[in-house]
Each structure stands twice: as structure tokens, then as C-alpha cells.
Length: 353
Image 1 (cartoon, rainbow, N blue to C red):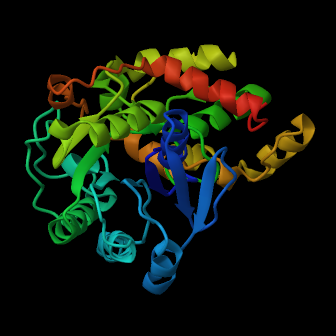
Image 2 (cartoon, helix red, strand yellow):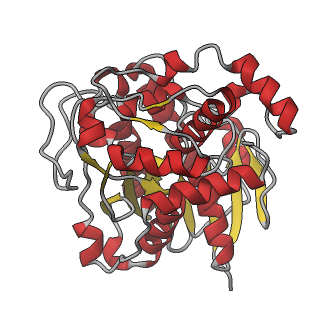
């Protein structure tokens, strides 16, 4: 009998990749979102996780073998992030009927576990890199910690197993996503090519010259399923990245080559995309009309604030995956291939020219 999964945030970068992977592996998949999008062989579940009663009603007839929590809502402060996102996880796990058999709940967070929230990003005393899972929580408020605590409390009450997955910046396809570096860079490069503007690296010297890594959405989906099906991975937290490392001074050239633009070497000045792209909405609308693109609204495609936060960090960020490797997860995804595959999908879906 096919196992049943509930993917929470199924319309996002991680959720859509996870749902697709589960379908491919023969699972029966339900995808929860406030505004579901059509996905092959995924049954939509409409719910706003901020509404406990609505969530309970939407989930009353579901008995998933696995639950994948891949969503969050950005708020104006970390205190609000904690209040809203902890409540969403709590409403979800309270709203599901109690399991009558084995159930696994996987929570996707990220490297802000080690770096701190956006309002204190990369500040203060940080753990040594590469980041390892045994490094404890920072002494700062962080909505990731609050989400984890909700999962731990519900697991103790209901008896399910859990896993926590900490990707670096995720490369994947989703429109209207709040954290979408791959599509943001693709749109930026497309605008540079169309206008003849220089393809200028927007970040810091540390990111230009230092080592870093990233996480392809497909790699993360494989890791989520692996942890579900591997008893030794239950009740554990894991980092998950592609398995390679690179410097942006190399990757910037690889991205530029794909789009046919000239990469501009970093000259010591940080030039955030939020400033570079501030007036580009009318230009993108014009380009979209001319090229018959599917999404003329720039704000639906790009998240410059998030790309600037990642590429502007003043520290080198690399992630250790030894814990997963020792338990048998050996999947690997070259990051430049992940970018190129995303760009090809964006073009095939008429999201970039």
C-alpha cells in the first residue's frame, strides 16, 4: 500500500520539489497551501495555518505517514516571526488527527540556526565554520528554535519521530516566493543583457573571495525522504547542502556565461540588488510584454533583500554534512549544474527571455 505524505507549503521552492519527489517514489501526496497551485498527482489542501480552527477542519480526514513542514511567513521583527511561525507549526500538529501508527515529521529550517535571524544576521559571536549540527543554539531569539520546540513538544505528546533539516540558500523554482536567489539572479542577468547594464556582483568581499555552498531543492527533497525512511536518522537534526564548495568569483562567471553577459569583477564596493533593481518593475513589464513572458510583475519573481542578505554576509559560510554521510546519505549535486538547470526551467516556462 502506498504511503501517504502531507507537504506543508507545497507551492514553495522546497515544498514543490518535495511533493514531486514523493510522487516519483510512489507516495500518495497531499499538498497544503493557502493558495495551492496545480501539481501533478498532488491533492491540494487549502488552509491558513494561522487559523487553528480552519487548519483542524482541513486536516480532519488525513492520516499521513509523513509530514513535511517547508513553509514560514516573514514578519517585521523576530519577535513576530517567533509568534506567527511557532503558532503555524503548533496549529498544524494540533490539527492533525493523532497518529494510529508510525508517523514522521520533518521540519525544514536553515543556516540561520547558526547565523542568527535577519535582524542580527552574522553579528556577534558566531560558531566556527564549517557549521556542524552539534553546535548549540545561539543566545538570541530565533523563530527556527521556536518551530523546533513545537515539533519536539508534539512528538513527545503524540509519539511520532522527527527530523530537522538545515539547508543553505535553496536553488529551485517557485513564483511568488520570499527567498529565491536563483530566480532573482536570472531576472537580474536577463535585465542586464536586455539593457546592456553591467552584471555587477552585489555582495561583500568575504562572499566574493571566500568559500561557500548551497542547496538544490531536489537535493533537499532527497534528504527529506531519506531521513523519513532511515530509522537511524530519526529524532536528529541535519545540515543538507549539495556537497561541493565554490567561491562567488568563480560562480559569478559561470552564471554570466549562461546568460551571455560579461561578469564585472568585485571592486571592493557592495552594490545591493535592492538598490540596483529598485526601479526595474516597469522595465521588466516592458520586457515581459515584448518577449511574451508568463509573469510581468517583477515583485512576483525576485527577492533582492534575501539575495543581498546572503551575498552581503561578512563571513565565510560552509556547511559540514558528515553526520548524514556517516548514516548513508551520499547524494551529490554540483551547484553550477543546479543553477543552470533552474535557468533552463525558467526559460522553458517563459519566466525569463
